[in-house]
Every structure is written in structure tokens, then in C-alpha cells.
Figure 1 (spheres, rainbow, N blue to C red):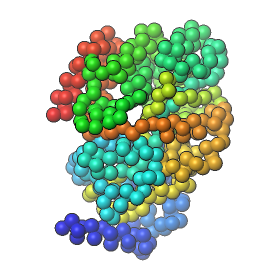
Figure 2: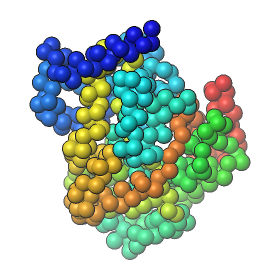
Figure 3: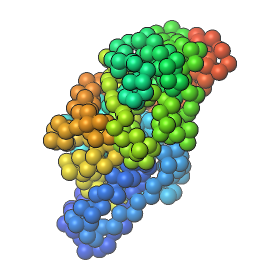
Figure 4: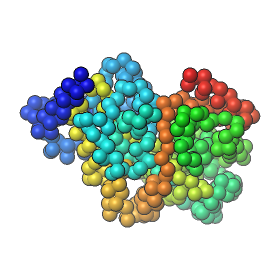
Amino acid sequence: MKKIATFALVTALLASTAHAQEKITLTVAAFPSLDIAIKAIIPAWNKKYPNVTIKLQAQEYADHHNAMTTALATGQGLPDVMAVEIGYVGKFAEGRGLEDLDKAPYNAGQYKKLFTPFTIAQATSSDKRFIAMPTDIGPGTLLYRKDVLDKAGVNPAELNKSWDSYIAAGKVIKAKTGASLINTAQSIYGVVSRTNLKAGEGVFFDSKNNLLVGPDNERFVRAFTLSKQVRDAGLDAKIGEWSNEWYDAFKKGTVASQFSGAWLTGALQGYMAPDTKGLWRVENLPEGGYASWGGSFYAIPTAAKNKAMAWEFIKFMTLNQGSQVKAFVDNGAFPALLTAQNDPIFSQGVPFLGEQKARALWRDAARKTQPIDVNKYDSVADQIVNTELTNVLEQGKDIKKALADARTQILRRAR
């Protein structure tokens, strides 16, 4: 039966690439700002596939992934192409509702060498199924307001020399300008917990599914400790990400720095704080750390109606250098495709960053970022650990007790 099903899909693929006469509506479900990249390529897509109309279903990040979780569980309301952010790849992969792109007729294995190496591991399930093609990656970066640092008399090098110097610089910035060092102390945990991982480690689990979170894990203890130091020193604005307050802080310069993926630059110039053009600069993460900070993928639901054309769309978005570069220039979606990273645009300055040649810095960071295994319980672990960190920051809970409780809760959920 498997051979028959595969033959049928191969036949459908051949029919689609031959530009069949029938009209097709291809449903693509995505989230900001990936939806912007899709809209941007539609004219080129229509030229190549005039009989295939893209129906874009865009929802906010959380709403999109919640809707896709429900659709995969029920088999209802599934799109032909599903965009997935890295935080959900492991969860969706283990549910077996997505096509294994390594198998025929996709045969995606031939394309893997074309992408930034660490992103392939991110899209590979624990049983080695390749369930999504990478489209953009998030090299971790430190954005800072140059005007705020100038006013405080702080050398930008102090921000990433070490975590101690970062915090010390924050105290000077706060004293001289009134600006907070960071939006929330939890951002420090976000960096420390995902950098300098050992071979065979994910953020929360190792390659053998052993849980790494706990009071004896030096990485998590340090992440919690540094976050608490920032909070105790009054250096964070206690503002959550993706809130109106967060956007406002960017616009007014009341927060001096922000850790994120390179893609945040595109969001800032696109809709968060476009009037701050020229005021931002970037550096690598503190202490020579390199990390993947987000990243987007395209997957095909097993129950999708137009799998053959869905695969054509995914290849158009991920293997086409023009599509990749356009998404990067338009909205900061750093290309996963290696050839796109060699485009002349990388040697040019970024106007929003005061003509700093930041793209080359991000490219170097991406190539130094090590592969990290994903686990189906990553999103569960992340939620639990962040809740316990909140207990430490806001209720004074002992750090080792918080990590022990987090470990217990994750193990209970992962059974």
C-alpha cells in the first residue's frame, strides 16, 4: 500500500510541475512577519504558476500555532502549507501529522547541504524524520541604542565582554540616563540557557531524552542567578515581549539593549519603531556565545489536499536565492539558504543600523552556532522553567528549589 500511495503522489507531483490546466488554490498558514515574505513573492509565484492562487491565512504567532495544534489533532482545517516556528517544531514532529520530507516524492535529503547546518537538526525529529524545510534562521544578537550609550558614556564593548561587565554597564546607564538595561530580567535567562551547549545537548533535553533542567545543572543555575542580579539591581523595565509597552520602550529609548534574533532588526524598522532609524547598533552575544534565536520552517500536513503543489511552494520559498534575499531585505528574515548568505547585500551597510555592516556579523554568528537537538517537550519545559523563574524574580523563591520544582513538573508532564 505504501508503494501505491507513493506512486500516486509522484504522479501528482509530475502533473503539478507540468503546469496542469486546472485552477488550484493553495492554502498557506503563517504568522508575522513570515506573512510579509510570502506576500512579497506572490507576483513572482503568479508568473511561474499562473493557475495556482495562494490563499494566505495569517494569524498572530500564538494564535497561529494554537490553531495548527488543534488542526493537527483533529484533522480539520489543515492548510496545504504550514509555517512552523522553531519552538513548535519538536512538538509537531512527534505528533506524526506532518510529511517526512526525506521520503519520496520529496527527497529533501538532496537539499540539506544547501542550508545552514544547525537548522537541519532543528527540523529533524527524535526518530530522524525531516518534517520541515528551513526558510529563515535567527542568529542570536545583542541590539543596543547607540544614543543612550553615548549619553551614558558607556563603550558598547562593555555590553558583551562578559555578563559582569554587561550588568556593570547597565548600572551606569541607569544612573546617567534613567533608561533600563533590558526589558525584562528573564531575557538574560533566554541567552544564557541556550548558549555554550555541549555536543548532544538541546536546551532542555539531551539527545537521549534525558532532562537537563535541575538544581545541579550549572547552565540553568547561572541563567537564573544572572537574571536575579539584574532584577535585584533594578536594571530591567519589567516589560514583557510583544506587548505595547515593549514597542513603546523601543520608540522612546527607555530600554538600552535587547537580546533577540537578527530578525528583530527587520521588525523594528518595519512596524515596531521605524522612527528610530540610525539609533540602533548590534553586537554578538556576551562572552563569545552563539545561539539560534528563533527560525521559521515550512511543513506539509499529511492530510493536506495539494501536497504536490505545496512542495513546489516550499521549494520556491526556501531554495530560491531571490526569494530568500528579498525576505531578508524586506523584513529581516535571515536566510537559511547558504548561497543567499553570499549575496552582495551582506557586504553593504544596514541603513536602520546607521550603515553598520551587521549582516556579515550575523552570518559569522550563524556559522558558529552549533546544532541543537529538538524535543517534543521543549515548549512544555520552556513554559514551566519560565514560570519558576518568575517565582524567583517576583516572589524571592530560592533558585535551586525553583529548578528542582521545574524538573519535577517537566518529568511529570513528559511521562
